[in-house]
Image 1: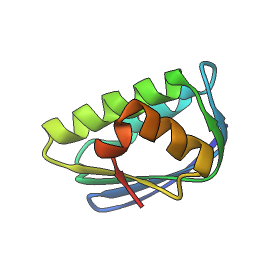
Image 2 (image 1 turned 90 degrees about the vertical axis):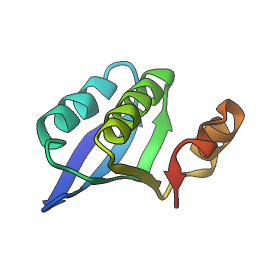
Image 3 (image 1 turned 180 degrees about the vertical axis):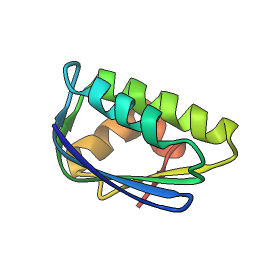
Length: 99
């Protein structure tokens, strides 16, 4: 997985490319741990992300809880059809802001 990010004041956008699986999900977790301080609006862009495993979902849920505790917002952008099916089947589509 390749990660790029842009931080503008209290806004952070992370672009994910490739697969977020057991081996690569910790990369996203480490990036977020480093960059989330002071962030109120987080957008994760899945335009080029081909696959999200349960390990990836765990990172997303942990990040969502962290953002909620900080009274911030987290949104998932450009979610592919397969990933959207997973979100709908798990009920997470009702948790995350998705556009």
